[in-house]
View 1: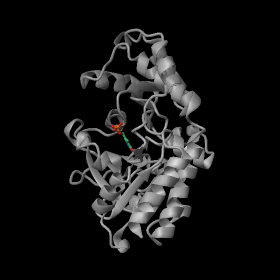
View 2 (view 1 turned 135 degrees about the vertical axis):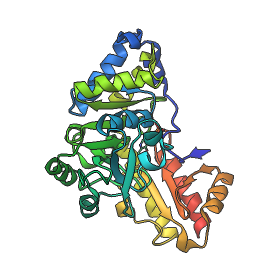
View 3 (view 1 turned 30 degrees about the vertical axis):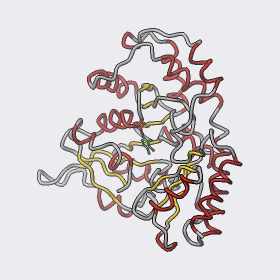
Length: 340
Ligand SMILES: *Cc1c(COP(=O)(O)O)cnc(C)c1O
């Protein structure tokens, strides 16, 4: 099977497993796990922040980051298909009392005009107060889109005196694709999440970064939510290994995704624009092909290729370090046959 449903399906490599088994560990609730501390310092530095906290999932990193910026009863603005709004199962509302309003664009991009209109920092005691804006870079359900207006949004929020939350689950991909250092993205946001378990290939883990004070508070909330952990340095070691070995190679995933998009665009013209595939996600719109997503997903599975759907007519293909250039080409040709 060639599994291109997500970049979360990777398995730890032999080198990563060796790093995990030899990691020095201690009780992290006492702050005594040297491998976790090393990972947190490393990621904080990469993202241009004072401090960071290693957590089990990207969702938890977002929950801790957003709640640090948005008091209960206030709102965070985000794009309509943002992970925090759609794929975290209402956590920000149920756990933190945070409400959401959204802007909407076809590929999840920043729309400064819409955001400017939504911002309501203080309209009197009748309206929810905007406390932060959250943006995803790259945008997952938008097709791995890089936020090219990221700095312009950060400028706008500086002026409005509102903090920016950056859901950087795939910020590594954005940085490799653009050559913009992670710190140039990270330092513009008050809280940043990054995932180690997506394209970087670690089995578990995300990191939230921010000021020392924000992270101190996040550490308390992590424990309060039952997510303190002990000798999790075995997992942090996988993250450190991933940062050392699997960042630059993301360029291969991006090239493979571009190639897949070209093959699909040949078979079903207009379904995808290859020059807009900037990172490791291909979203193809099957509306005009006469095929349903379910039909193509099932047909591909029978032919040994796993892909997924996002939305009624959209097929999503995600490249990663366990899928070679050959695997990706073969998978694309299989899907192309089904679309023709
Ligand atoms: C995967 C992802 C997350 C976090 O997901 P978890 O499954 O909770 O680790 C957050 N944001 C985006 C954009 C993602 O793609």
